Image (cartoon, rainbow, N blue to C red; front, top):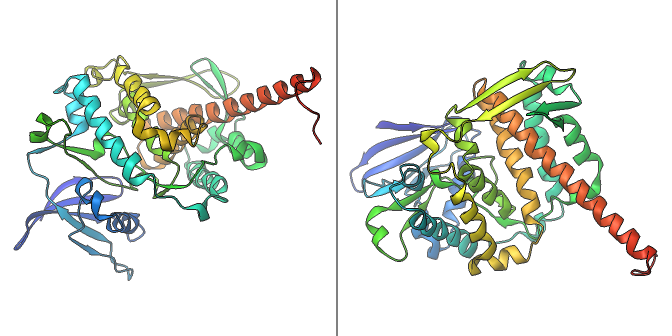
Amino acid sequence: MRLLREGYHERLFLLTDERKGLIVRKEAKTASSTLLAEIAWLEELPAALHRYFPRVLRSAKDTRGQTPFYDMPYFDHNWVLLSELILTQALNPAGVLVLIAQALQVMFGGIFPTTYPEEEPGYPDRMVSLLDYWVQRIAHLPTFAPLLRAETLGLNGAALCNILSLLARLKDEPDLREQLRPAAVRKVHGDLYPENILVRVPSLRRSVPQVMLLDPIAAIGLSRGDFAMDIAKFRSWLSAELLALRLGLFFVREERDQSPAFVLTLYTEDPQLRALSDGALLREFACLVDTAGWARVVCDADPQWQQRVSFYEALYALSMVPLVPFPQSLARFLVGARHLHNFVCDTSNQQSAIGLGLTEARGHGGLPPPS
């Protein structure tokens, strides 16, 4: 058994099975891993979707202290990660967009239609509790405890509300918290981005290439939620923000001020990110989700989904702060604070504008007075 890769929560091993040949074992690092939920997610897929996700050949789900694992087929040299095809520019942008569309069609056509109406009433509170969990973990880190006590943060010359005050507003303002409610709670991937999409190289000559979607649930442990969280993770990668943070392509400088203030520079023009630096793929991705017929049933039923994307980008960034070394943890904290500030303040401004519009309409006789 040979170690292939080690992530934050799991390890991948290559081993030989007498009957099945080479297989890959995904093993949790701790018994409390989300791997059990991932196994259940894969095992409950309908037969029509099996060709898009790894098959669970064998699994250990014993809860008596044993770390869970499952075995899946080995994807040989004929398979390559979509992220590699993008970053090496092995395909032109049109070819990349075909592959992105193929992966998204699997999600919009096969995964997102599964809904959970019974989970909808408590969904906003669940999201706030999840954010609270990660904020409290950050607050216990010696580096961040003093930083969190400040009311505001300065970031690249702009004043932001700090994480704790933003969280308090989400807890205290029902109308604001209600903006986290999706039209439906759906089955989601939870960690959808090009590094979790395999492409079969021989199929690139076909009009419909073969893709395989890996690692559902790995990011923040969610298997059911808002489809916008999958769009947010994909968007974060295509914007080069996620890669710049992970690859250390950033610089943080603390400024002297009455409150904590920082300048954060992401080196998105670095040669490693050349394929993403002009933002063209990100724009094409946004256009695809906005216009593709296969996305319309889900998106049109939830016209407010885009304003929730900032919240999920914040949640993804902040959930990594306790898991990565300094200064990457600080950079992710600052990115998370900016996204959360954008969600809370943009949503509040929209609500204020709507309220002002209603007041003006009533004043001019356009609407009846409230009963």
